Length: 61
Image (cartoon, rainbow, N blue to C red; front, side, top):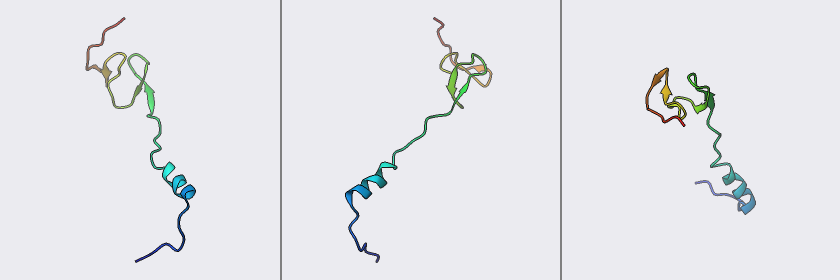
């Protein structure tokens, strides 16, 4: 069984762990109905449309 020859310093250990939870921002695209930015493959929160059809009724202010 492999055994490390040297102890890993806390700095090196923490630098390795710092990369673990990085996530990128979701890709936003304009809604084809109202041109509001929305997450792809989701119902538009501004107008309630998805793939050209109204999925949910949204109140207009």
